[in-house]
Length: 244
Image (cartoon, rainbow, N blue to C red; front, top):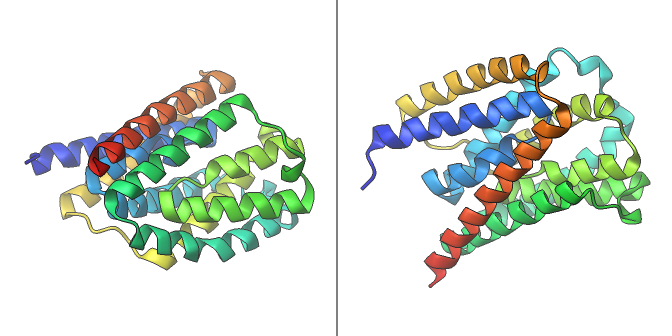
C-alpha cells in the first residue's frame, strides 16, 4: 500500500509541474497533470482535482489580461460547453474505473497528437466551429479533466494569434472548470494534500511566470504536449491492464 506522505508529495509535485507549464505556455495544466492525478487518486477525485486546479491557475493567469478577453467570440464556446458538461459528469460517474482510465488515456493521447500536428478542419471555423469545439471541450473536461485541446484547435483554425489565444483560453478555463465542478463537486483530499496543492499552485504560477521570459513559446508547447502524450499513454496502459 503506498505511503500517504509519498502520495501527497507526488500529488504536490504534479500540481506544481502542471501549474508551471500552464503559466508558461498558456495551456497544459490538465494535459500534463490530469493523467498523473487520475493514477494517484482514481478517476473520480483525479478529474475533479484537475478541474479545480485548472480553474484556479487559469484565474491567476487571467488577473493581468482579463481586458483582452473577447466575450462575443467566447459566448458560443461557453454555451456549447454548458450543454455537454452534464453528459461528461454522467459518464464519469457511471463508467467503471478501468474503462474510465482507458477513455481518459485515449482522449489525452489523441488530443495531444491532434494539437501537435496542428490539425486543420473546416468544421472548426466560424460560429459552427465554436459550437463543435465548445461541446467537445465541455464533455471532455467534465469526463476526463481535459477540455483545452478542442479550444486550441478551434483557435488554430480560426487564425487567432498567441496574444489573442492565451487570455481567452484562461477565461474559458475558469468558466468550463467551474461548470464541471458544479456538476460533480469538489475532490476529497486530506488536509495535508490540500495544503500541498495550494502551495504548488502558487509556486507553479510564480515559476511559470519567470520561465515565460526565458523559454521560447514553441519549445514550451512541445514540451507540454510531449509530457501530456506520455501521461496519456501511461494511463491508457493502466486502464487496459485493469480490464484484463
